[in-house]
Length: 81
Image 1 (cartoon, rainbow, N blue to C red):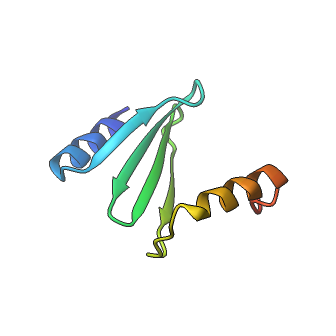
Image 2: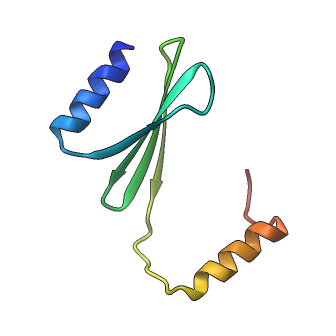
């Protein structure tokens, strides 16, 4: 719990936007948004911390991409799990 509280205090000190979510009983998930990245930081009951970072490639596309992206998901072509 101390790791989580310390991390949240650091995010507030840095004025970074974050949200909390609980996807499973034994963990809390912190979503952090920074320019060009999104972090998923999971704090587990056993004191383990897992971090996943998603980075933008900087490309901006128009709304026509939404139809293509959704079609890929529907067809099961979204890539590896």
